Length: 76
Image 1 (cartoon, rainbow, N blue to C red):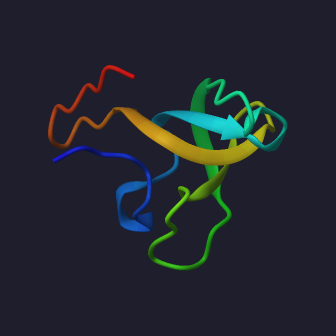
Image 2 (tube, helix red, strand yellow):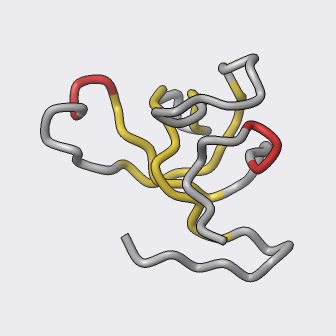
């Protein structure tokens, strides 16, 4: 099962993810980092759960890079 960041239950603090920043929505450029805070309160969001990375950048999760629970390593 692809972990694409649309389900809040799949996202947690410390998880390595690729996000799309608001300024990059047109280009689709990804930014990699580690989740600090989950900002979306709903359990699902079609464009990705909004998070704040540990460096302060905010965007929507496009891919979960390393989910140790199931060993999923997507290739974007």
